[in-house]
Length: 92
Image (cartoon, rainbow, N blue to C red; front, side, top):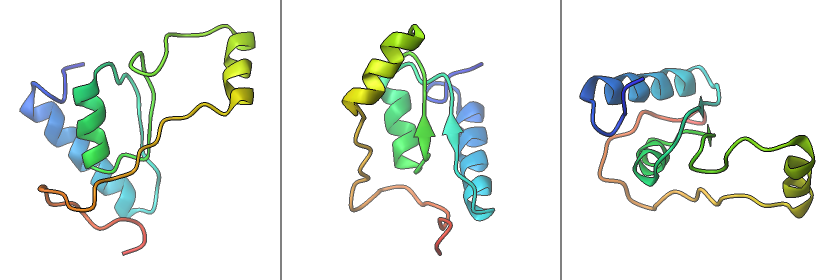
């Protein structure tokens, strides 16, 4: 898969998928996030969930359960003003 940061076509496809899913009142999960630049791109386009090596390598079940018990999470608060146009979300 090409990188959404370096390949304009991949970026356009990602933005279109996010917009389409939100217009259908669906949540979007991006897989394969490996860099902070990819995370930032997806956050600015209001991707709902992300997973990949940026967050964690694959873990044994016991280690994953420990992380869940600890309640570890990444805050994905969105900035108040964005410099890119966004499609309306599921609420409007």
